[in-house]
Length: 122
View 1 (cartoon, one colour):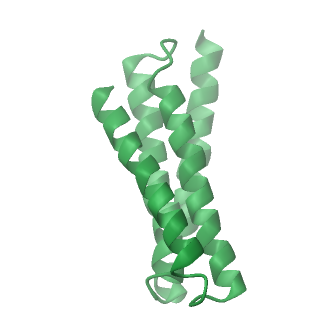
View 2 (cartoon, rainbow, N blue to C red):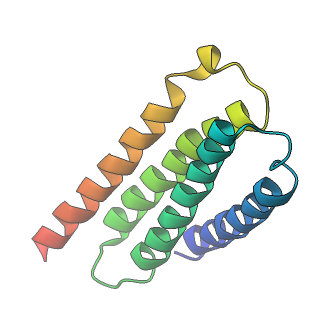
């Protein structure tokens, strides 16, 4: 649990740093659509940081359930938000990594479903 909370804290800090970077440094460099996409990556990262804080402090989840949900969300953030950052701020050609963003979104969905089924068990 400590490891997951430590990773979550770093991801939360990064969401704030990346959000500020987008609002200040990228505002003039990116077009409106790219900036909106970048902000979506930051927003979904922060949403899942809050979810991770809940998952890793809620005593109703088993250790295995907590780990499964956490890793689905960690990988979802990496793939979903990370690919958006790479495309918008990193200049990576979307044609090269087009499949990564929806894969990250799928991991988020699976994580929420695993959470749902963990709640049903209780």
